[in-house]
Image 1 (cartoon, rainbow, N blue to C red):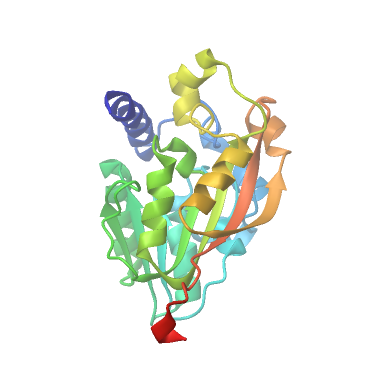
Image 2 (spheres, rainbow, N blue to C red; image 1 turned 120 degrees about the horizontal axis):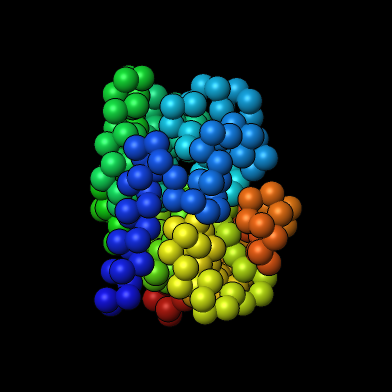
Amino acid sequence: MAESRKIKDIVQKSYSKMASGGCCGSGCGCDSGKDNKRISKSIGYSEEEIVSFSDSNLGLGCGNPVAMASIDEGDVVLDLGSGAGFDAFIARRKVGVSGRVIGVDFTPEMVEKARGLALKQGYDNVEFRLGDIEDLPVKGNSVNVVISNCVINLAPDKRKVFSEAFRVLKKNGKMFVSDIVLLSELDESKKADEKLLCGCVGGALLKDDYIEIARSAGFDVEILGEDKKISKEQYGGVDLESLKLKLIKPEIKCECCCCG
C-alpha cells in the first residue's frame, strides 16, 4: 500500500508540473513539450483536431482512442486520466448536444486546467471530476463508452482500473484503450526510475499480462492495433509498443432453469 501511494505521488507531482507548462522528462511525449503537434500527428490525431484543441494538447498519449471508438450521438463517454481535456473535447463532437463526456483525473492542476478550458469554450456537456481511476467517482452501469490514452500503465493496481471500468459501463458498453505495454521485461533499476514511472514505461506491464488482466475483469478483448514504431520515435528504443484494444462488457445471460 505504501509503495502504491509512493508511485501515485511521483506521477501526480510530474503531471502537476506538466499542467503548468513543465515536463516530466521522459516518454509519452512529455520530453517534447515544444513539439506537441508533431507528437500528436505521429500517434493518429488529425491536423484539424490538433489546431482546434491546441490549448488542451500537452503532447501526451500513445494513440487516438476517440478515432478508434464507436461513439454515437447521445452517448455518455468517460475519459480515464483526462488531463487537460484533449480527448474529452474531441469526443464531445461525437456525442452531440444530447450526449455527455466525463473526464476523471487525479491531478488537481490538470482538472482545474480542463475545467477552465471547457468554461472558456462553453462546453456545458463536458465535465471533469477529480478522482482516482482505481476508484472512479462514477455511478455503476451509467456509461456507454470508456476511453483511455496512455494512462492505465501509470496506475499501480491495473486490475482495479479495469474492474472499475467494467463496473461503470452499461451492458454491451465498450472501452477503447491505447496504452504502452512491454515486449520484454524491464530490469529493476528501470522499474524504479522516477522519470520512467511518470513517462509511461516504468509501470508498464508485459503485453500478454496486460491483456489477461483486462479479460479477468470480465471484458471480451479485441486487439485493434500494435504500434511498435513508437519505441524509437518516443522511447529511445525500449522494447515496447503502443497497444490498441477494444473491450466489450458482455451481457450476461441467465441460464437458470426458471429463465429457460
